[in-house]
Image 1: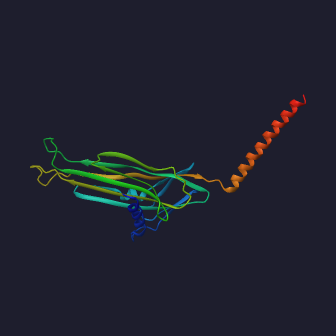
Image 2: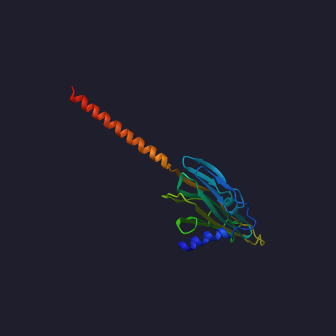
Image 3: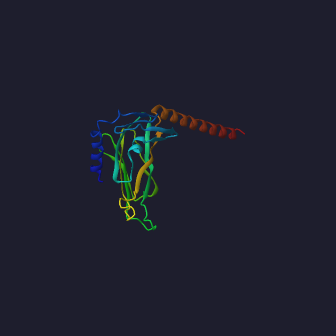
Length: 245
């Protein structure tokens, strides 16, 4: 997806907040605040220490989950997360991590040979970051899985940043599953197949660092200057002592 398309999609999320969405809840830390403008469940602060903040995306986990034993099912999630950076801090990077978990089962024929049923799943998640107001795209990632019978972890990172102004993180996901029965002469109505797929433990990790205030810089420079003066004075005293020996 190109830059203009991505930025337009992020802007569209702001305008497309569904009428039944919850009132946005704010997560506050020392370095920033975050509001999910489009979510049906409350996201949660997992940890916040040493410049690393982890936020559980409960709304995404609740939506990106589907299972069926009869034909087609699926779910979609779109989240726009507005970040406001607090004075005295900068954001140096962020990541979106989690895991796809899928299960596929097609009943075999009575003789043990593969049945003629079908079990299918497919999932896709996209993660991007941009400035607010829109205009600068900091990065984007996506991951897709198909026919997953097991687990597939993912970790999408955007780093080497120095953000002191507001920005948005955007995450979209789509889950599709389908299942059709195995039909045999003994079971003409079919034996149900099963397909499921979900995103487990989706988490934002935000990396921050404190920015020294101007008076801190002044104190540091003054301290360095004082150390330099003392060292020169000690050197001069030592030199004078040698001359008078």
